[in-house]
Image 1: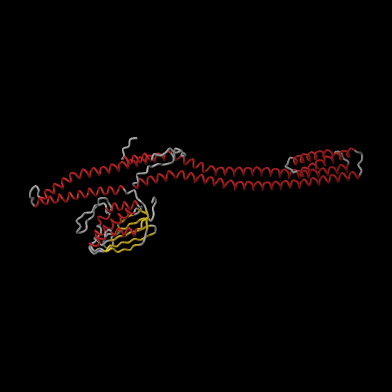
Image 2: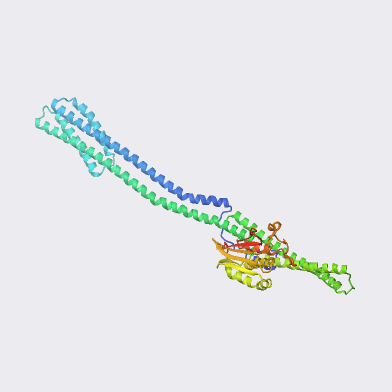
Length: 503
């Protein structure tokens, strides 16, 4: 592939070519959200279906138990009424000797058989079923005896009494069947209670398991969704901070990977633009230095009188040419210096920095200017540590201190405070100079902006110092502000977080 970037960048890009990774993301973020929602809902839906199945089973069991209980109660009571009716008809026939009673007996006996058959279809245990069979067999044997006695010409009193007692025993057996139906109903209620307990137990086991599974799926889906978003956020932060070297690779749905590719294309374009800007500044400085050198040499020859003696007006013009050529050369050098500073802006080297020690180091470097103008520093410093790039923070402090010295009159006092407030470190510096004019306060941090020079200072400012200082502070997620004018002098506050994301 043809590379139009510098060779070191092309080599870096070739070394960063990623290996093909298995795709476990869908092609679109919307599909990922839909799948995550479905997978998270499935365990809950399974738990609901399980609960519905358990409730439906319990409802069917309840209907069956209620139906069997009602049937048992009705059949047993009918059986008791019919057994009592059989006993009454048998006594009538034995006493009245009326054979027509047998017809009524047959009718009641049919109903007795129907009731006993209905009871036999119920879920009776072995004891209950034996009792029912005994009741049926007893009734059948008594019916055969009654029919034989009805055919006889006479029935001894003892046999009539014995047969009546047997029919009374039949009624007793029928009453026992009522107790059997009550036992059957009680057993059904117990079965219902056991079924309810079992359904509840299964739900208490299954439902938390499904909820835990759903929560686990939701957390996994959240991680899968958050990963490409986090990578996009980190990539955008790196681009915004000027860190253009690491290649941008987004692992996620197809549309997110496409967005990552476009961000990486933007990164390469920014690298190319930075390279073009650097080449442009170098070429411009080189192209300007050549004619500027010729102008300076020519002005020097004129000033030395090599081409003849100059008049006062001519010498004044030559002096202006020399001064302006020197200013132009200084401006070119400052432009190149600013370019070098800005190239390293996004590449911080974070470490633990003791601000009080760093501040003392910066003040030591200004001992001579302070002594030359008899300026005193009034310190109020607390031990505070921050995470940051020591070299760039030293540049910020150096700029603030040098500005305060430059704008302070001889014998003045500069107040310098370092203190901690909540989770921030704060540095305040206030001089006793003329302060900053109202017209300059809004533009003091702008690039190339130069305020009014202090009295007696013949060297104009570069217009870069405070702008670079604020850029460095913002790269540390801090702030550099001009404080309100309180009785003269300029005051600045530098605020730095004790720690920041990405440190």
